[in-house]
Amino acid sequence: MECRDTILEENKSYWTGRASGYSEVNKLELATEQRQKWKDCLRAELTRAFPDRPLTSLSVLEVGTGPGFFAILLRELGCAVTAVDLTPAMLAEAKENAGPLADGIRFLEMNAEALSFADESFDAVISRNLTWNLPHPERACAEWARVLKKGGLLLNFDANWYAYLFDEGAQAAWDRDRANSAEQGVWDQNLEAEGENFDVMEDIARRVPLSGIRRPAWDLERLSALGLRCEADEGVWQRVWSEEEKLSFASTPLFLVRGVKAD
Image 1: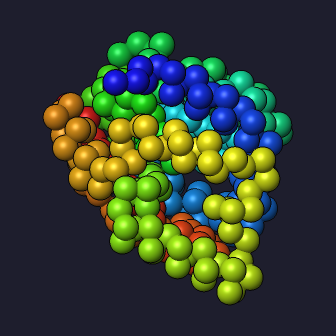
Image 2: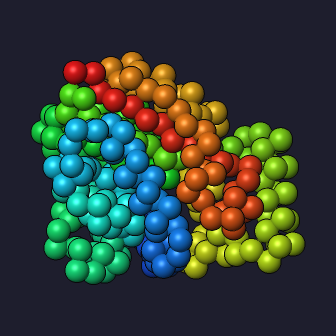
């Protein structure tokens, strides 16, 4: 079996090359109604988990910050934000996108599967579109649970992004998404993202463990075994996605795995 550590280095190389193009996607989110939609979502989740605490009292870790979209929103909400990413090029984009907010965000280069923080360091750990891409997702889950304080909140937004590589039905649905996007004249990130190299990403996706596993069932089982009380919100995409995203990604709807660490 191939050493998954080589996939980690391939991931780093891939996302280094895509940093600029992916940053443009985040900039679009920041410049449109997606900014408020996502901010409202994060505020609601944090307020629900910590009803008796102001958001300014919360320490939040964002894992896999990429160009910094969540880190920026969390800082705007007043949280103490630490944002980590494996790729220095992504962190550079994140700092630039954060502008004046960057001074209030701790940006660190770090592997999501091997965090350097002490146990029980954060009130919340948040991630978006990361877990599917990890060579050792079970290690990442264990690390995220470890650095959460007791009673802390885990929010993991993700999707079955590359299921079409393993399932004929999923492939047919993915093909329909591409056709529908073209017919409606919608910018299709799957085909038109600047700096994207989809054959490379598909090759990596075939070799990471979660691409062929239906989620969020895997996440719920893994996190529950780590002592978190978990639930899945499989309708979150309806609240946070733009109409264009709903069209382009209809076959791979975003889900949220919400977990609370036992006291």
